[in-house]
View 1: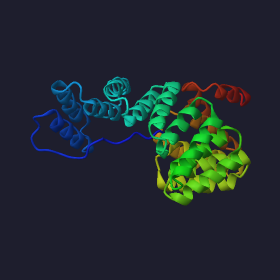
View 2: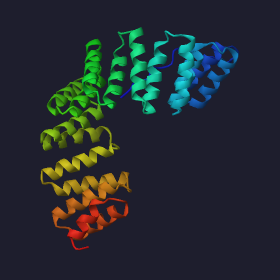
View 3: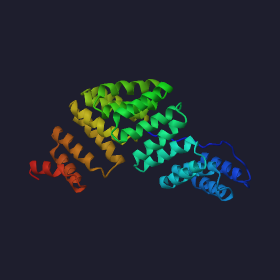
View 4: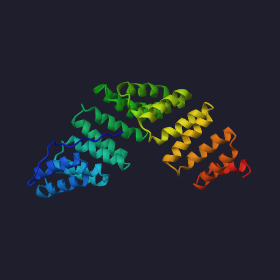
Length: 300
């Protein structure tokens, strides 16, 4: 996961008149979750002082928080034109570019931030995530390892390195990294989920179920964990458990064609042919192609 830096300044004022006062007001509004109000305050600061790099930087951050990543990139770009050593702007512009799918641009920007200050572990973590998205798992692992050396308590870097190792085809090494992440943060639901996935890849289905259980205790809305736990349960022969997990998933995402198909497979294994056919028909109506093949096999 890419990590964006927080606001540069930390203060609030009651009455805003100067550019700096508008910046401080915008920061206070941002911390209160008033994103549009913060953008407006930073815009007023820019109107008063168009060469204030902090105003452009903070408006970029507020736009990013509001989901306007293109606008954020434009504001960060103006900020670094005014202050080329504003390393947070390079890192955050990289974050915004990654959100737009420009991972090469993200790597380039975060590399500029690292060149300005090679001691910030989050920068390496962020660049590793962008590299991983590009399929450069070796480069990503090297960046995560650097982040970990700088901060051995950074659970996210262990988790992300585990993801890269799993994607690179080494699930055992991935499990070791997810375990290290969990030693640092037992409430890290993504690490429990990711370790469950790696355990599935090694054939340790019971261990996977145990990890998915922990992930779902911490985050009941983690839809993918219901699906993957159902798969692991089915691999263990627990088809009723798989049906139960698909039921829960469909409560959260009632239009999920794959879930209907998977539930149909589990019901078929249980001998509930009528229920399986209903699920396959529903999956087919939602665009699932495999369901049609199974329905034909069942004479439907």
